[in-house]
Amino acid sequence: MKKHLLTLSLALTAALSGTSAFANTGTINFEGKITSSTCPIEVINPGDGSVGNLVKMGSIEASRFTAIGQEYSGKSFGLRVKGGAGCNLNPADNTAAVTFNGTADTSGNYFAVTPTNDGAKGVVIVLKDKTGTPIAPGAASADYDLNDTGETDMIFNAYYRSTAATVTAGAASADVQFIVAIN
Image (cartoon, rainbow, N blue to C red; front, top):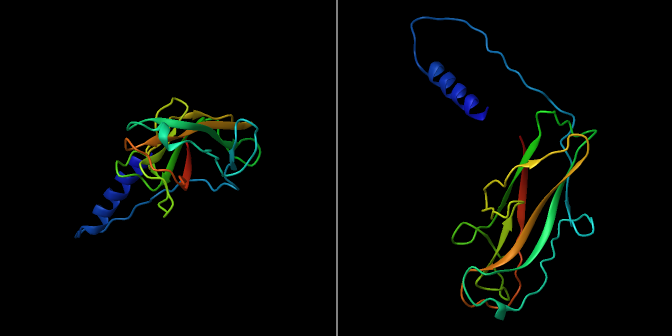
């Protein structure tokens, strides 16, 4: 639908920007919907069901990383879409994908840890969707089926990933925003 709207707006702009000796009138029909609210979304810990936006990655010894591309300390987290009343999901809105945004590492494939004086070096954070596929910053996850009458938990995993053969010990945190696109 977005491609059709873009084509329509480009065609409309081209038509209006051209000069013509002939004047014509016409009608443009706009169709849409204003909803009363969006679906509430919570960040959850699937292990105990607690709600909060902090995923505790824990500690791992820098010495465990001995090569590039090793992943450790995987932590699950979920985004809970609160379906039901107030969510306004249509039966056709049956899937959602999540795009995570944050500071990318130099490869653009992973999330850089926040640089600090006492920060870890040679490590990034990788997020994976339900299929186990890494999600690059700005890219969409796999689609998750939505429950239009109740809650849906979209489960993801976060890992530390080495980008150097030697990882330097220190703080390894990142701030990542998310956008849930309901299809």
